[in-house]
Length: 273
Image 1 (cartoon, rainbow, N blue to C red):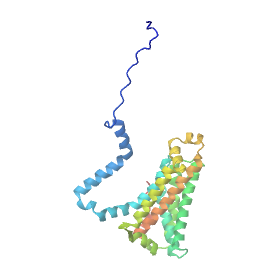
Image 2 (image 1 turned 135 degrees about the vertical axis):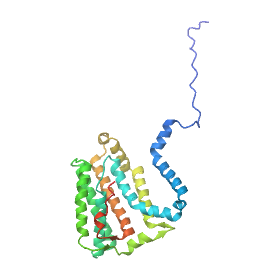
Image 3 (image 1 turned 45 degrees about the vertical axis):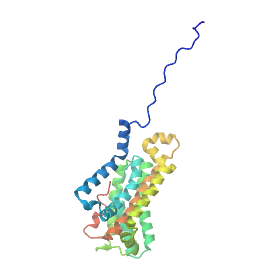
Image 4 (image 1 turned 90 degrees about the vertical axis):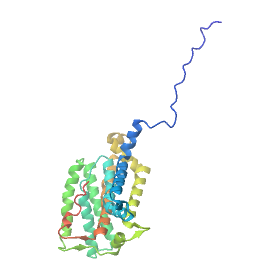
């Protein structure tokens, strides 16, 4: 029998890795890069809980959430700006402008409380639109743009504050309700923060707008070639950042409910990042 036409022997298939094998170094590195800050917070909480037993008490945890709510709401808008590769240095000044505008309208009985809050929201959104327009349309560096608006907006807000050379108290039932009331033991201001985080989480992960932001931040030129309206979508984060700052300022005003004469010019400082 002629064996010249016989098939050559086949090599044995490569061994398939068994499931349940230990995580590789790359997987661990990926997890740490994505959730490293969460692990750090947990470790710090454990350390503080051991060294100071009252740190993990219910009342202290509630106080921490109330104190962090202002910055946390600001961080929502800043996150969207950073996602597209930008930065916003004017958030502290926008917070001051939004708070003082609302306070002035309420204290001088110009409009109702809800309308005053909406006016403050629109003022903040206008600043965000100006920032976004100059960055996306005129192509000015975001650091230069937001540094300029930071100075200009702070001056405008301080002008509003000095119209009344006294303590500027905000006497309003709605602000008192947000500041003092709780639902199920959770302060209303914390509930507002959590609801905003839920809304923006869905916006960034489940909508085309959110996917566009990630794409623009990854590669703006490629995003434009794919048909994403880069300039139009780039305006949104700046405007939403200012509106998030406005929401945080409502929370801040419900906590203090006053602008003292010596410190009111300092309001909003230290919150640029």
